[in-house]
Image (cartoon, rainbow, N blue to C red):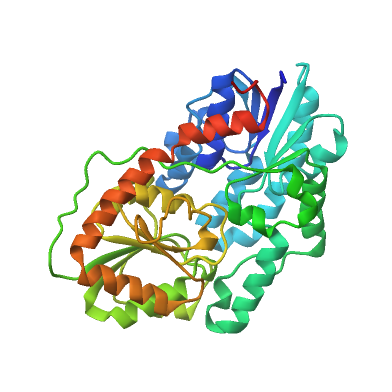
Length: 404
């Protein structure tokens, strides 16, 4: 099918960039609709450092800037509010940005003069466009598990670990918001998901139109700065928002039980004030925010990555860790069990199991040759699960060409 695709996303994560690159390489990209775009901010160098860094993260160098339709006002104000807490209540919320983006995407679709248009967009970005353009082919990516399934699991977690409940966001989502997401799924012609886990959370009525296209690993590191030793503390890394959705209480509980046998490094920002988080960060190495390059540099110096998440889609940080030669301890809910091979490139543990995390850490602490072998296996796996493979599978899933 010879479509010209308008892809829309308000922020532009790595998976979005890879989808854009896939469409661009196929000659099928009509336009990219977003909010803030660095290529449209020539005076970004005049901004304060924190704001400049945020704008620079929204760069889409694989595209001709003329293909990008940016609508930055509300998102720029939201970013400003997030950096200046005193005015945050006066600024747009993330939901405000999504609502505005929905309308902009529909308008940009209508403005296009190309024939055979299709739209490719994401969770909570589609309800206006899908509703007002019923005859346009509609591709919909769900990058995380089904929202109602996630709410049920996380509400249960608040009962199990109430002192960590403040870190779980989204529990106050209205029924109207959930219904809009359901409408998007219902109207989509094809639902693209990044893992078997995401597909398993969806109601059966949408199974026939759901296709798995797994996100890929970055290119494996050519060298690491890790030197194996027979003794000394195991260097353990966590990277992600400090939310109980990521299973952080189980990480910190395991760290306390391991004591001086490990050195824990945490990279990630707080999502809400929480005494349990504050207490747990005492005594560990904590980086609130680092550049992507800095994160990868730290990964190359560590022994093992622990990510005991409760609910994801396909955790990109797990794939990044593997690409830097870092064995991973994670759960099946990470959506990465094809990459984290139990006993090979890491360990897959049950959710909510401090015991299982401790058991894995103890094995690696006691057997440094196993750790060395797992690091080699992590790099080997990363070399086979690539973004190039993702791009090929995505094009085939959109039927943009006839597979040979």
